[in-house]
Image (cartoon, rainbow, N blue to C red; front, side, top):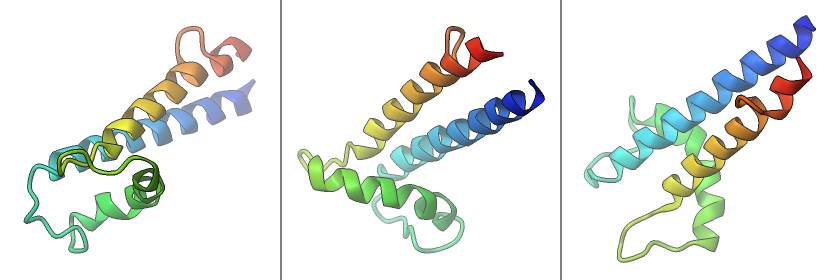
Length: 94
């Protein structure tokens, strides 16, 4: 019982953090002069770029706008809801 609670809490924090980082990444796309390799922007770029690089091969920028961070916010939100939502799989196991 306790281990499933720890797993749920850890997963909730991890998924919430990734959603937050992708939202910051969306805001950073509005400022093309931002250098993502420099601190503090690298704190957002390093964990999100592997996901975005994979998705960019499937979904190229549309009209110069990179929509892949929006796709990942949706995917992580969906995963969080399916696993940890009110009727989520891990919620029902507790």
